[in-house]
Length: 95
Image 1 (cartoon, one colour):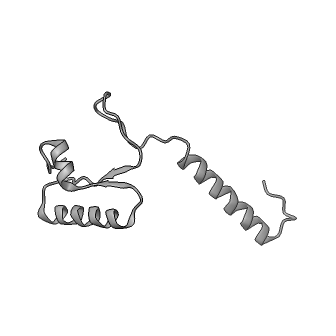
Image 2 (cartoon, rainbow, N blue to C red):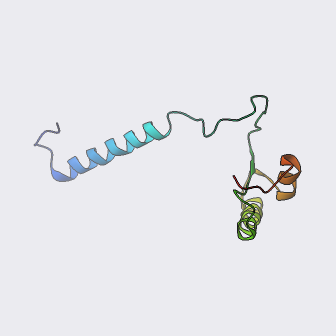
């Protein structure tokens, strides 16, 4: 496919460029990271909530720590764990 007249470095550059282009096209083609269960829920852009996958004490410490780090270092509006619990009702639960 690639002509033999191309030297080794040119072939490598072409191969890497094609691989990068392919990965960008396959990774960025569709922006739907998740489907909402409730169709009436509206997601506001620019805010983030860290949600625990279970109610283990170690997991909750990690979630709280990550929430605090994001609040300090991110430009997003980070929802605190107390607000997550208030909005979800039963939280944390194992999912």
